[in-house]
Image 1 (cartoon, rainbow, N blue to C red):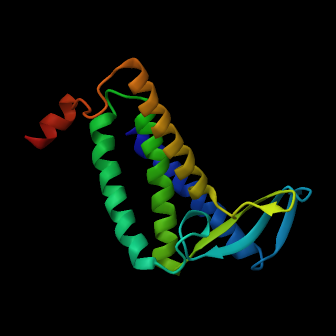
Image 2 (cartoon, one colour):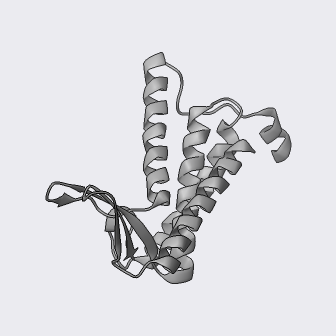
Length: 167
């Protein structure tokens, strides 16, 4: 249950920050936070994270439904025997649902975090994108830890709760 709470918190923070940007800033308006390095801006994105695959809405709907279903299924299997993996999955879940809702309701995602590194501007992103990236990084870390310790990573032990729920 705590992992679904993490996903809900990610979703609410993501939606709250996007709402503030969409309602209080003009499109393309910029607020410097740390000189030219970190800027809050109002940007819209019809693509995936970091602006890739622009205009592919049905693709995103289908992939998101499949990914969310897979995460929920795996989260229910992994939550009793693991710690890092369910946390990582919760971050991905909250971020995926946040961006999915934007695409479903508005056909685009509100992005607002902009970082400049000299003359290079990193693609503008949002809280959901950040949580998805951190979640995926933690999934990779968890997998590498399991490989190093020699644990079996292809199967997660089912909990008594899950077994009883399926009988």
